[in-house]
Length: 62
Image 1: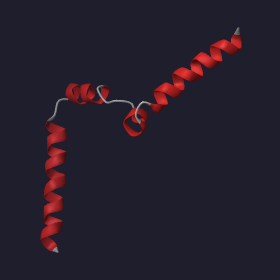
Image 2: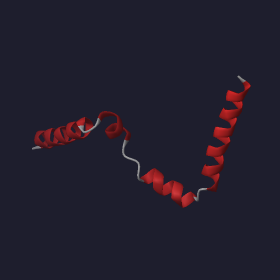
Image 3: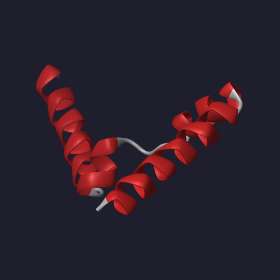
């Protein structure tokens, strides 16, 4: 049991060190490259729905 705890601490420490050593600009760029969460979890459905809704709302304004 103790060895799994030690492994967990080692893993978390490695992740923290990699994060701290990574330049701030690199982290910001990686964050900007992320795809929107709706497309990640639901695919193209939210995009299609938003396009359909925007066309529908423009037709109502005429």
